[in-house]
Image (cartoon, rainbow, N blue to C red):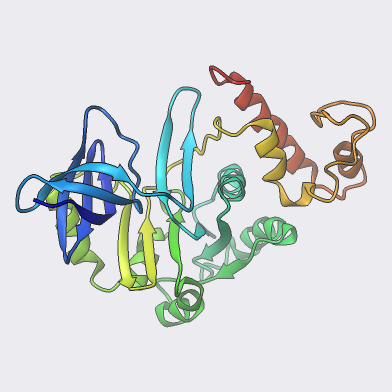
Length: 298
């Protein structure tokens, strides 16, 4: 059979689902390769009526992933937008949001923050204050209440998603699943079919899934996670992944300044004058430290 071109809509271990010609194909890679991501466009060789072997990953425009000291976890490819979902309750991790924003900058993907459950008034003001720090840097924040006001939520989010390939990430309990159910028609049918095809049983929430809303619009749902390692980012990539650092880069006394404790560092001066939030510089130092732990770092 001739090779086909397909869109990867789910990945589970080394098993992938490719959408091609109106049907789902269960695909594997040759050998032990597992470098295919949800959102990839691939060329595969059919081996039966609904199975195939992936031969090639076509060039990507973007790739979003996280990493620890020893391995990387691909989240999605060819995405144009990242929606970080947080909520008034339960509490969310500022560190996770910050790291996701750094990952988006490094990957060249625009990022937005969605504050969900704004109908819960007890913690609303505190949550608004926390996300305002990110709004001050330039990241748009959108307030919704997926369960209490679904129509209002759609009115806010649909214009932002139209024509985009958007991945939603967030910790468990933020209401991300409720948002996906609103945004994707027949999502439950799609989830069931994908899960059956991947034979993943109860592990339906442990992989990233892509849903096609229309020809130009895709929504990617990712599993909830508590950590967002960025060990793969080099020092140079890190300093450029903080947009508020940009006006000060190149202003240091030494051309190879690490922005740690060097004399004449423009970034440190900006932190001292509160032009840069000290917590953001601390995050940079922490991520730099992590990158230095990665085997083979140069």
